[in-house]
Amino acid sequence: MQTRKHLLGLEGMPREEIQSFLDTAKSFLEVLSRPIPKVPILRGITVVNLFFEPSTRTRIAFELAEKRLSADTLNFAASSSSVLKGETLKDTARNIEAMRINVVVIRHSAPGAPHFLANCLKSSVINAGDGAHEHPTQGLLDIFTLREHFGSLENLNVLIVGDVTHSRVARSNIHGLTTMGANVSVCGPATLLPFEAESLGVTLVNNLDDALSETDAVNILRIQLERQKTGLFPSLREYRNLFGLTMDRLEKVGRDIVVMHPGPINRGVEIDSEVADSKYSVILQQVTNGVAIRMAALYHVVGASGLVESN
Ligand code: CP
View 1 (cartoon, rainbow, N blue to C red):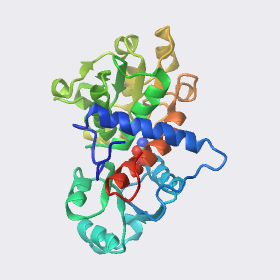
View 2 (spheres, rainbow, N blue to C red):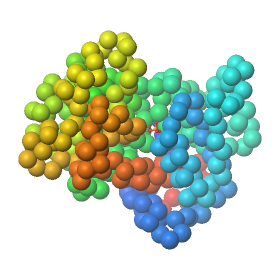
View 3 (tube, rainbow, N blue to C red):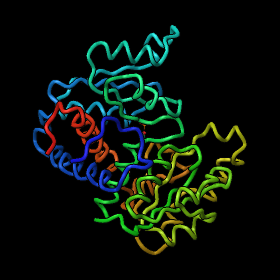
View 4 (cartoon, rainbow, N blue to C red):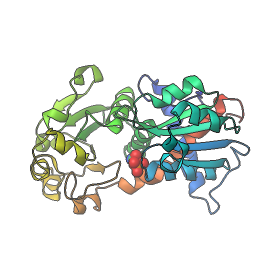
């Protein structure tokens, strides 16, 4: 098993290490299917989940992963903390660490917040989403879900649709998938696609129907409704007409395409309900796999501290 003290992003992570996370997650997926889905691997380890932004899937998956590994878990919500009295991120984290914490899981609206904590704490830090920068455990769970479905990622055609520029999910997927040998395309309004596509190793496609005809799996991003006010796309109706994943659009392709979405879903905007709930969708499998990936993330960072035995 490959270990690292912090899990901050997938950019630059070597293929062998991504592979190692996926393999560990595969073993933990088996643990999750047991009648008693719990192992004592992180007994004695304390993890704090520092969430400065709302979350359903990531926060609960981390908490469940911690419990499944027998770690002690603490949850912090900025909205009911001394952050409201003006306490800084550094002071908040250092005070919590002084209570003898081993791992900090952080979600924050500021890109780089986990990297900042990694520099000022002795604990391991896991990035649970930092602004529009990265969401490495979401990237890993998406890649894991694809590997479970297709067996291999080499030359797999993956299409990411939507607001790629502002999406930490897209960035982590792009870094991880290209490292693993997949061909990644991105599709959406030109105002929501990244300028640096070439350096990211992805292909830009303007027409969703053309893009779908070449695709094995499509990852639909949530349209961040607040973006509409900034004039980056004209209306939700136009967005749905041009880039919404409808059943008509999917069936026109004439073969099965795997449909993914990191959640939360705007039904009837970026994806129709009948697609999200269809046989093509692996959205809830992504959520299940998310627990196994967070178990793997915790195991790998704690393994780097020498507090657990690596296999
Ligand atoms: N995919 C994801 O990050 O969902 P949450 O915001 O609910 O954690």
